[in-house]
Length: 522
Image 1 (cartoon, rainbow, N blue to C red):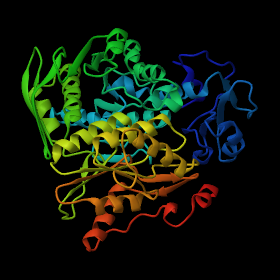
Image 2 (tube, rainbow, N blue to C red; image 1 turned 180 degrees about the vertical axis):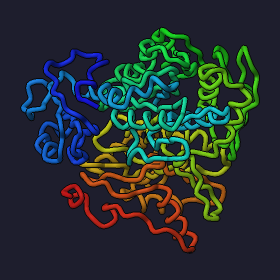
Image 3 (tube, helix red, strand yellow; image 1 turned 30 degrees about the horizontal axis):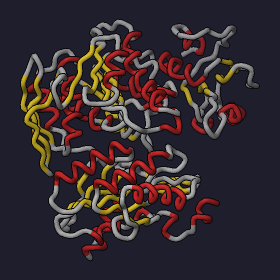
Image 4 (cartoon, rainbow, N blue to C red; image 1 turned 180 degrees about the horizontal axis):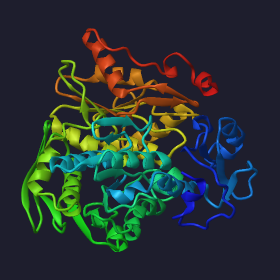
């Protein structure tokens, strides 16, 4: 691939005098640069990629793209917005793979990963050769690739690389989970979406977006992108699937300019659920539209997963070349569960232990409501709130748990370079504002492993212990260091200790043996 060829279908002003350089890859991290690579330098929140141009050249970069007016190399090309340009340059490098696929985008605050997996299963059940890119992994045929420690849309050049591999593998459809970060940072701008699905848009990421309206606008870019998707040989459904029950509905209903359908639990939705039944082992309901009536079941629990199933069913039947409703329902039923989403951990204890990813106020609310329906016993929640992120939700989540759980254990969740004790005080204030009494209905236990142990010791027969906020994630950040951490491993380790049986070892966090001052210093 020649560098000049990346600009043949470039949607922004094309720079003059592009050098005739052959490229072998694209990197945005100077450490990942190999001989013949294009290095794209971008400014981030804490680092500036332009400072690493000499290192990229030392590693063999054939050309460098950065901002206009910045010092560079003899093969430096200045662009107004390198971050926005990256997705189009990467798409061109890989031959615009999204133009050869039916691309279904899924966005929302909560439920994106679950809905993406449900939709993927529905496609596969219909015999469609589908792939998936989620914040957890990329699925390409029989290959499953990890997409990172923490949950956000992969970087633009990685997304295009995954799509190209899918095309090479003979896949025809892809389900692509998209985050607000992914949209605001232009990581999926060149993905040529054909179907857009939203789960919900609730309080989250106010630290980055500044307001709910800005956050909602970032999510809405998925739907406006449908209007500019180019015609494809297999056709363009250009269908928007929106949640009739969510606070975002009125805005999106007016905003969407393409064909659209709504789903919901009540009347007024184009596809709705009737006769829903809930248990600790799953959900059952009848999905109804003007065109079909199909019995649907899932191993997932909670009313919110009825909504996720409806979203997937609507997109599969109406957006993906007319999949039969019964076939789509069978695919939905075939999903056993999602790693770290209401995942039970059972070592033989006489109470239920669950690990869930709920890390937003709405997610914690619906998770605790689901837990309440699963047991006649008590609900014990363990959760934290991340450092250097949306501070308002610390109070909100503690208020919700104080109202909906019997006991709340406040603990660490990626404190980063903030004071963990300070974060816990903000949360404790929220719990107190809703009648929580420290030492009786809620506790502060800074070390997450000890917090899980403490909650397990509180549990009696028939109770539910919920560890929320980390789910499938594989690390936790203290200071500027990512420590290997998995809530599921921690729960199994704590249960084994409690039951006096052989088991896994509790993962290490610096809060086990260091003061806050020590780990903040690194």
